[in-house]
Amino acid sequence: DTAVSQTPKYLVTQMGNDKSIKCEQNLGHDTMYWYKQDSKKFLKIMFSYNNKELIINETVPNRFSPKSPDKAHLNLHINSLELGDSAVYFCASSLSPYEQYFGPGTRLTVT
Amino acid sequence: GQQVMQIPQYQHVQEGEDFTTYCNSSTTLSNIQWYKQRPGGHPVFLIQLVKSGEVKKQKRLTFQFGEAKKNSSLHITATQTTDVGTYFCAGPGTDQAGTALIFGKGTTLSVSS
View 1: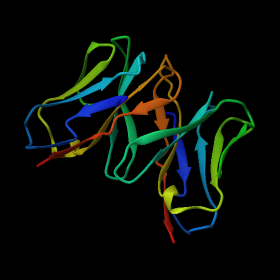
View 2: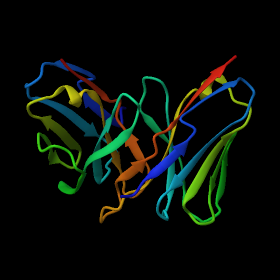
View 3: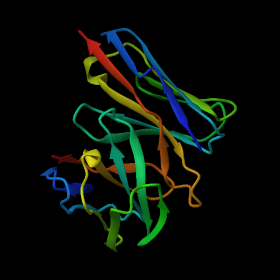
View 4: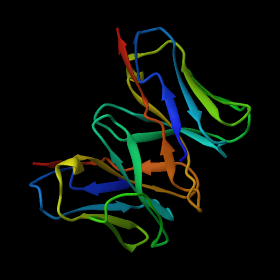
């Protein structure tokens, strides 16, 4: 059974479009995260949700909005995509504050 | 803001040689975690260190947490081709819940046989 799953695995889209990435975890964890990994492999936290409440929101553009319908899901919606949004986006979950389990990643390419 | 620095950025070794990556934080950490990311893969948790001066071993991997809890290292003895990947250290962020991780930029290890 996949612990943390993300869809889609690849996403190619044009500038200006709106897209969503879905994430689900079946570990019963109480906190979920979104990270962005750039071309230099730098991993940066974007959002964190704990029991459906946003508890951190790093300095990301407000074009990015996390949505959590329940404790097992944390989706990422991106409006008006820009070239600089191209990256790999990882969802993760944890039973805070312990180790985090990452999903397989979504490679977003904006053309 | 809080920073976690990691060196070297890249390291190439011959199979059988040892490898070490170093991690330094600008602030005292309550704990430090290490992750490994294989090429094309996702970060996978390796270990968490909590105590000052702590040393933990996992087979050929040795992890250390500094006495001041501001630095850490990962040492691999007699590298194998399966050790290839990027190794990240991460410390808890300064958010109120302390759940966010601040990652170092990683050390990418390549091993030739």
